[in-house]
Length: 250
Image (cartoon, rainbow, N blue to C red; front, top):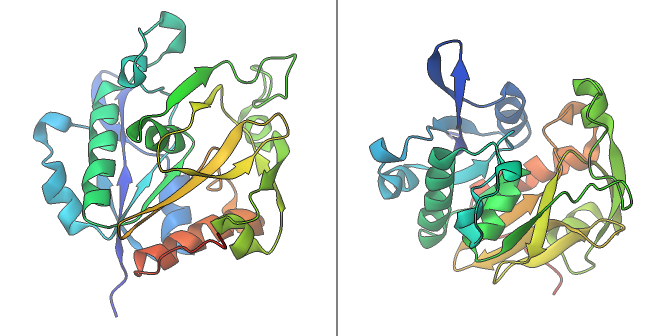
């Protein structure tokens, strides 16, 4: 039996003097390995993408993390310089694909920026500078290396009725934390799956029509092979890609 086909979002990047479509290898490898899926990359080139046509060919969608932020005008704010960098092509493709996939009853998963895209797609808003020194640190100090950045961790509490709690059999999870933005107002129809100790929403889920939605603010694609909780996120993705509705205990 052939494996389901997962669409994975790209970002616009500059490599030398050329524009490039880019996604970090770790997202693709973790998803293909632990969700047991084939994968196709979705370019962030909205003027050349027929999003309904693309969604029809996919079994599910993974919205990846990125150094860029969603343009604040997308959730009703003027765009201050401090909120960048931005990638409007990524915004258009990601938000459009969320809408198209949900309309077709297909699963959508999000990681970091992808988590924030799902919140914005459902009418939510984002807060900036959530890792302020006087509060819980949601990111490592700016001068650490890549390993140090992704090693920064804190605990999250899992909603008792949620997908993650049911699948893990636990009410808590240790996660890495690599973000400067987070949920301010939760999008409609989204259920809180996890919160940080300071109350910030760290994961959401929804079941809309036939579409299962699950998104996390942390990075389960980082060293996935070393962390059972990270593997769980992608195994849930694999189940959703095969038509299983991710049920809660609610």
